[in-house]
Image (cartoon, rainbow, N blue to C red; front, side, top):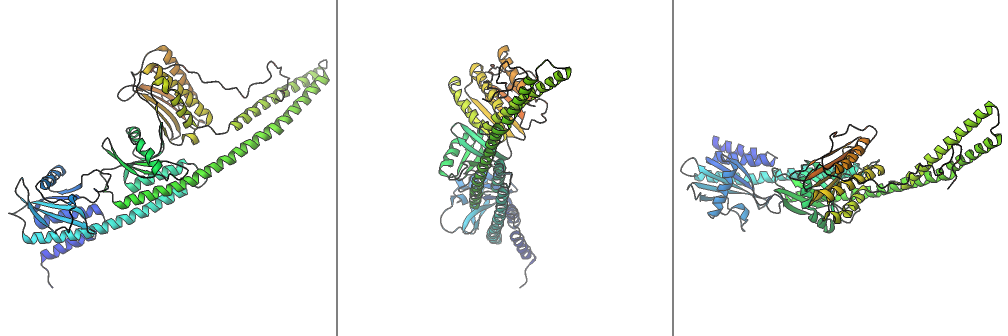
Length: 564
């Protein structure tokens, strides 16, 4: 059989389509070849398969040739108003190979070619504005063949894309597993779950959150982190709480953004939701994406469950070591020092003071030794005090408690958000400093701001502890009293290698940001040396007994502390 040159070119075009495994490339080539075969000057290919059960809204994704997207959408809507059964109507029965109609506005003939995948309508190929008087019968037959071949090529591209996504999901799940290697930190699997979910879903942003009644705890964020993210998470907090309970995912539209929430398994130790902000520019999501992402997140739940148990074992071992060291210091070391001090004091008393110069010098040396022993006992008791306190404190719990404490003074409950593993990264003494700062900030808001909303953000990320308090009140004032209170907060920050910034919030109100290093071995210069200008009230920290203070008031340098 001998083929003409045009037939060979057409066969070559079809082979070119089926040889491509990238979906967008398949669709773009189908639109281009359709224009060349029919002489159509305007081509619109509307992808519909990702509209049903989709997070992207109800509008199809349009690929165009010879027409801008806005005009393409108008043309498609116009044809639908004229009675052309478009693909998204999903009418029952077999779709025709080609449907011919007229553009009600221009009167030009329009061809509609359905692209079927596994018997399901996947896309609409619309060809309009033919170069001649209309579309030739041969062109119509040729374009029908193009529609069938495009369906096969799309099916192949989807199968390949699915296999690639499955492979990537397996690799990402393995990366989450590797985060369990010691030394284990819960922040590591959280970060890998967020990044893996973002990549599987093709999302702009992914966050692992735990939604409580008083706010949202954000334990990990991957991808873009816009200023609007906190408000977006607040808007879906109620849906996230519901998902944490029933284990069902959810979708939402928030300020033009499409949000998809997939809960971690509610039957495991860590309860939370992976919240994804989807990218509207990405290729449409297909049903397999939901299954892949759900499986990945469920796997992450198992890893977190194992990690939490591992962390609890680590804490149990640490607490046992603390108790053992404290007992040894108290029962052995202090007793030995105490006995040594008594012996030295007894010898000093026996020798008396009416001795030669050498004897006086020896007595002075003994007195100095006794003072050093007293210092050692105080240091050891301080260590025992710190060991007995352990690491049972929770900055997150303290922040929530302060927010509830100030609810009556403010007239509303502040919104609380935590970012990162604040309880595991922030040491107890630093957490106490942060709660003092928060108490000052909430007091300022209650007494001076006249606000109707207050947001508290606590972040432990990038080696920094950041406390941000934002209100929508009347803004910064000039009172000398409040300014002195904020100067105290700035001094606290400088002592810890950080700084304090106070200034206007977006829109109205005041934003206070107190930031210090988590690792305070070599602190940076303060982030702000300017004098704060927001209203504030001085709230001094509640004092704790100094475990290093000398328990024997008025004792002389040669006295030995009694065991109490």
